[in-house]
Amino acid sequence: MGNPWLDIPLADYEGHMALPDVGQARMLGDIFADLLREYAPASVAVLGCAGGNGLERISSAVTKRVVAVDVNPAYVEATRARFAGCISGLELLAGDIQSDAVTFPPVAFVFAALLFEYVDVDVTLRRIRALLTRDGVLASVVQLPSASTCAVTPSLFTSLQKLAPGMRLVPPARLHELAKSAGFAQTAARVDQADGGKQFAVQTFRCRDSQVSD
Ligand SMILES: C[S@@+](CC[C@H](N)C(=O)[O-])C[C@H]1O[C@@H](n2cnc3c(N)ncnc32)[C@H](O)[C@@H]1O
Image (cartoon, rainbow, N blue to C red; front, side, top):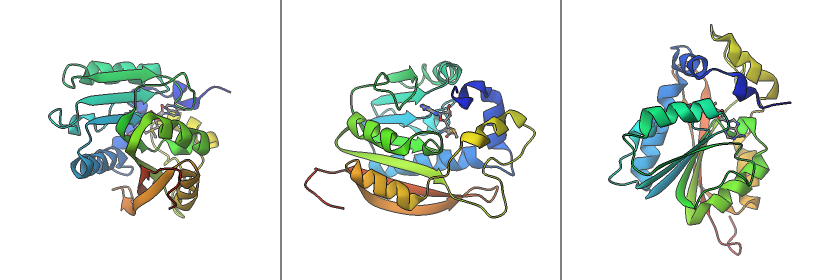
C-alpha cells in the first residue's frame, strides 16, 4: 500500500489545519518559533514539512542552513515556490524519511511535528539520530488521545479521512523510551493545546554519547 499522504492535495491539508475547529497550523508554527528562539540553531531540518508551515519563522541571520523533507513531491515543490527566494541555503528533499536514500549532511536541530504518527517510530528516530550533529537536538510534536474528537477531526476536507486507517498515536512515554534506545536523552516535555481543543506533547531530545544514561 502506498503512503496515503501522496493522495492528499496540499490545499486540503492546509485548509483543514487552518479551520478554527482544528487550529493546528498556527499552533505548530508558534511551537517552532519558540524552539528556534530557545536553541538558535545554525542548521535546521524540518521533517514532514508539508507546504513549509513555520519556515517563515526562521531567521536567516541565525540559521544558515535549512533542510525541508516531505514524502509528497508536490508539497516539496510548493515549499520551494514559497520559500526558495527568501531562505538562503534552503535544501529541499522529496522522499520517505525512513529510507537511507533520503539523506543530508548533519544539522544541529530537527523539527518533527505530527510526523511520528505516520512512520515507524524506531526506524525514524535512528535515521534522525544519524542526521544530527554530535550534540544535536530533536524536537517532536505528537498528538495526544482525545475522548471527544476523532484522531483526524472530521471537516469539509474529506480527503483527510484517508489518513485515519494508517495513523497511530504515539504516547509520549513510548517516544521517550524509543528515543532513549536510539541514542537520545529527553531534555524537556510539555503539553500544548490547539484552538480546536486537541492536545499535543512537545518533547525535546539531545543526542547523547553512548556511555551516558538518561
Ligand atoms: C500531519 S502533517 C505535518 C506537517 C507539518 N509538520 C505542519 O506543520 O503542518 C505530516 C507530514 O508528514 C509527511 N510525511 C508523512 N510520512 C512521511 C515520511 N515517511 N517521510 C517524509 N514525510 C512524511 C506528510 O506528507 C505531511 O506533510
